Image (cartoon, rainbow, N blue to C red; front, side, top):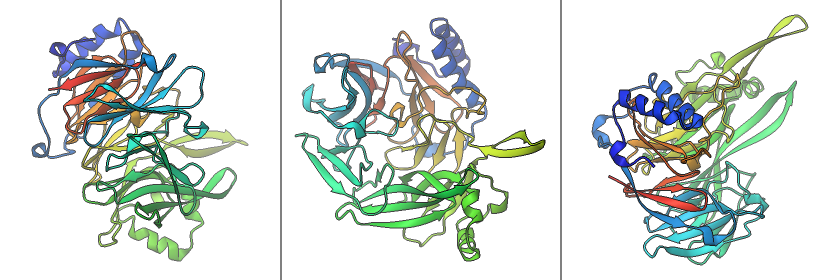
Length: 435
């Protein structure tokens, strides 16, 4: 591990150290060089200087949680702190079983609180299985339904509670800050013509007391991920489905245009990445912004040029949103940081050009974490390279990677007070003090 005294903030020094590190691991060189290359094109005015910390964080290892007694070849695949910061929930796999296990670790007593086994095939390790706490800190959940029900495991006893959901199958949910409501996105595919998918998209809000729901129809804006913002609005990201738009009635198109003011709908292409800010009360108009245009591809069919449009990003795990504690700053996949108040965005990692370039393996929200105020993004490469993953601390307001260090394997989390960092490291968890 590279000790904190060697952590750096100067761009020139950072480049020099990355070259040194690259002599021992090609994967680390690739990961770091991508971040440096991308930083040159960042928008430097994402958030006001006065709203966030300007202090450069310096992680220092303080202890290790040894999980080797939990089973043969146990691997930590994700981890998250509870709202109080006293417990750490671990999503793990073990040798010889396809099922995930959940371990709740008591940080004050430095012991296992509970182990939850036999989660079932629905919760096999996958990029969309993101363990999270309910806002009251009483339960852990994957935040997504399985066969029209959601499972909540008591964090102290491991007992499971099933909640039956109303309506069609929904994607992963996002809880609001006080735990009264949860968001989910739904896409219903209604068929297609010549491989052109026609889909209707909805955003669903659940009342967590009754689990009854209400929906917003987003039409051809095919929502991929949703989150609550600091102002209680809904941030939605997704793609433009021009095939769905072409099937809409004139009346529907007129209503739709109210949500896309400032954008030329006729100029949008299939797979353009969009973001929307939606006021669920309906008192304020919807704000829509084009995040990334889709990429045209052309080939000849029967002697004629045929053009189609592909996604501007290629994430093996699919798009996701992850926010800071307040819902002010969001990471959209491994490509952009979005201001949840204005939709201003900057690119913190290069997007693929769909020509075979491979992004770092940190393509799941399990491998990124924000400081509580959103001023810093911690990004781990999820590498199997000797010496551990490359972990980078980035300033979310500027083009500067502030520091880096090597350790861990998969999964990263920041305690709610911002003073402790946890890294999954196969059969252990490394804990770092952040100063």
